Amino acid sequence: MRIDILTVLPELLKGPFEHSILKRAISKNLVEVHVHNIRDYASGRHKQVDDYAFGGGAGMVMMAEPIDKAIGSLKGKRNYDEVIFMTPDGEKFDQKIANNLSVKENIIILCGHYKGVDHRVREHLITREISIGDYVLTGGELAAAVVADSIVRLIPGVISDETSALSDSFQDGLLAPPVYTRPSEYKGWKVPDVLLSGNDKLIGEWRHEQSIKRTIERRPELWSEGSDDYSE
Image 1 (tube, helix red, strand yellow):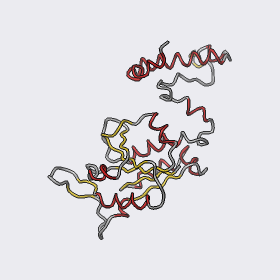
Image 2: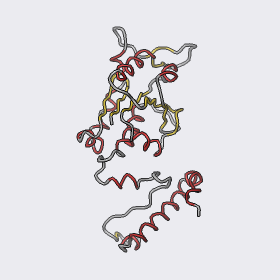
Image 3: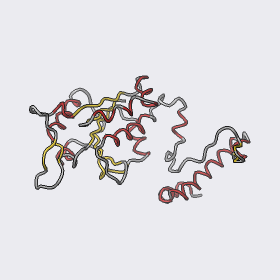
Image 4: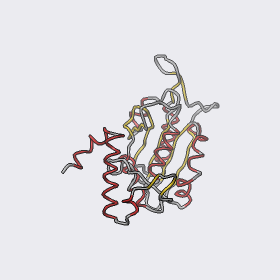
């Protein structure tokens, strides 16, 4: 997989891809992540990428031309499955979307900034708009890093124990059950006996029951959406 991220602040994206699982995925050539400065595609001596909004109003708007040139340059070298714009009014990002994107070959992610981008970019260049939540960030860089992280960890070989990703919260529409590790008793706090039983069937049943319980208690809207799948 190849992920190209377009931004006016490439420095913000250095850290997330230089550590932990993302760094290992890149070093193992399981994924390529390239960060591009949109200013490199801007015209004029000052490399301007933003301007005032037509009709007035506070804030600046990212210009269409440098974004179009950046996307056009990348598309001239390879085909892209998706050109994603990170925006608060996009579709809410979830595990299903992450799963879907993880099997793509090439993805472009455009990071918004200022008051957003010239709407013609969204109309003519973008194939998918994604939001990571109902709140506003100063730019789309952190959101792009979140999306990239959630996608990359699903690529086969990135996580050494691939079943770990398959048992994460939301993979089956439920929250993950509680987890414990050694010692089995600490300050009088004990690990549930079933987890020490060695009985895989009972352990699996307990974990499923706990997932349902936690989902109903903590995220009832998830349970109501997927409850039909668990009805007898």
